[in-house]
Image (cartoon, rainbow, N blue to C red):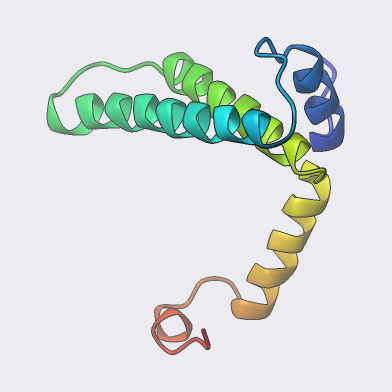
Length: 111
């Protein structure tokens, strides 16, 4: 199996955008889809933890894949690159937590 970079994934996801909208309409569809798929993921975790359902990792992965697709669509609609977003987030977290997560740094971090 070939592992895609986030940029490659984003380019592929854009090819499968069925709504065919652009600009703000594409962003709105992406935002609503992202919220909906995140809700489906959250619902699986609720069923697993609160209701005792036997939720398979494959089901969780499928929902996370749907979240990723809409995230890619949101980035594309804004002209952003997922790889750059990920890199910037890593740099922010390294700055915020240089030695890994710390409750002390979390409580006392600068805004």
